[in-house]
Length: 471
Image (cartoon, rainbow, N blue to C red):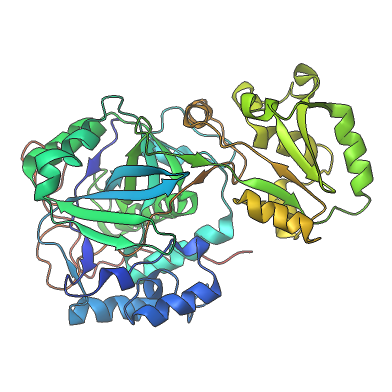
């Protein structure tokens, strides 16, 4: 089934409010200190909805009340016309300006997505994850989205259009100059530009580019599985009420709000996530681990690290070694071929699971292992005595991520880091019909678009059940 990315009538902040003070990073990178700072910037900061410090994991009453209050007093309002939302992010890396461009729209969660599991994917799916998820995080999102009746932040997807049609036609030239761009700068100095597109020709162009795309999840795996769960719950509840399920695409919960960028765009950059061992499981010492590593790996020149993405740079005791697996055919015989080129998979398979007999996520949960995106911070932890040793990893090429996903495989958690993060608060995707709205949430702005319902569920139809909270 072709993947369908549709325009939608987003809920956005009143244009008279200072957007700079209303947006926030994604919920999963917000510390308690940053929560307080964001709330202090503006009483209507989006962190109050997406990660309210007054909410417990099983009670999002405060966020629910804020959503209703802000819709009622005009802080938030739904767009009159279905739109795609252009979104670009600009930052400087080693003296060079990088601009990542993409589109926010409503992605149909087709039936193949329902067959995905944490062990593998199906090659028929049009949205492919690349890492496993943790159930308790999904539970928290399900309860929040059910209470607020909205999808609060877009997940980050990657498509592949070698012609870069959207980037050329919509982000450059006269079309881009005519748009009403909103601009904010985040705390890292990244410039975010955002504009709603309702032009019929532009929407038709996006539809045509996206119609056959298979998309990879760059960031937002837990929100993706949240959306799948809500879709399944809503369709089941509808069938119980009406005797049969509606055609796919007729419920708001059949869709997921997503930002889609292009693998062929040079603005898509992947960064590594390093591993820092703070301590070791019972029965292990640093000396014993290093001895076992010396049996499996051989030390090579440091320059090999930049040439061979399967090598690992080991930092320990003020020294650095580059390790290359001595006999890949022997040691990786039971690891899928595409994963043998990924250093994080080799490390997980041979060292964490193979030697320490503990998966990386379990090591992290127990406080023995940390994931560190900054090499500087990784080395600071070592020099400060807060870590025994550290494994410096590569940024996996997008082509390798693509190959692994399309092979039906999943990568270890935190194998990639896509920077910068998408802001929350630019647009929300409501599952119901907010106050004052009198047309369907996904009513088409494009006469040629097919399979779009003229009307979706009316306001007041309760479909979403809260998920039971499990550890």
